[in-house]
Length: 179
Image (cartoon, rainbow, N blue to C red; front, side, top):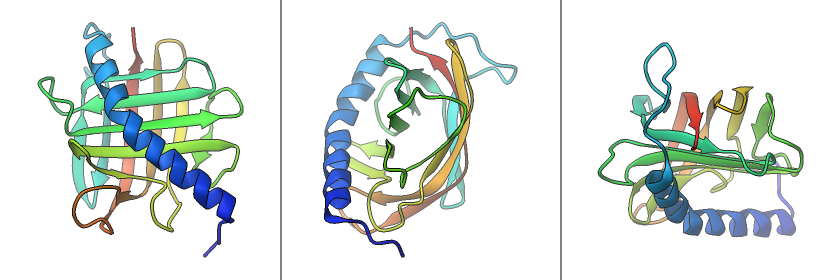
């Protein structure tokens, strides 16, 4: 197991705290400002979906992304239009423009976090625990949409059972650019 320096541990802890604090605000902003007039793909919708501990979860309400400036990609999708919870979302902050490639949370030149929010302050996210194995692959990106795959381990960040984890497999996203 790779040991992280104190600086990297502090950086990851601060990043996790900032994301957990800002994610509800970002979710609210994206939900309230996002367009619902999306041009769907051939399947008829935009989405974020994955197997969470083997159970398929797919969220397709206001499934969109922001990519401004080009070095940050933030994405969110909700289960229901009447609530911000549950939701799936992620943010990639890179030292280079976001492009078609694989991003790993162990790369020191990026800040990557994936969040599964259940209700209020109850959430699971990457950057918690020792796994540090989360990966997001952008397979296609342009001014109208972004597609990709993801997977890894997320840990409970708040609430009861703080040490519980969820294994994410077969994650996919197809998201519209937020209008």
